[in-house]
Image (cartoon, rainbow, N blue to C red):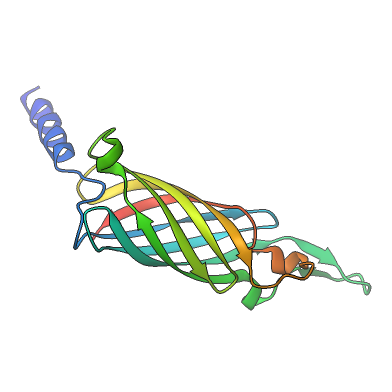
Length: 171
């Protein structure tokens, strides 16, 4: 029983040191799933704290599974090639965890991003269980698409509302 109580005490102590965003010098790495119409894939992001509530970073995503279509010859082919499946974004975040003050382990971060496909915004949230590990979720919305013509199904990838969820790490 003493061993069990010690383990619980250490776990609770570790939780007290978890913080979602600490300001200048804070570095967050996230990896997770990217979910959107006609495709699912993986995403990664790396954010650098520039000030008390400001961070900048990069995020990339690659769709592993995209919807397929039947060619006139009867073959099944994916709707998108590599260039359509991949996206890279530079982003700016306003980390509001200490402003809304729900919990020091919780952060909400709206922001703007410029990608290879569009200019858009995102809204994310992350919660840290320990000082190094947490979970996150994000929603990305394009504001202005670079291609203003009618988009093909392949061009719609990354040019629509997307959702990300996964693990977040303090570096």
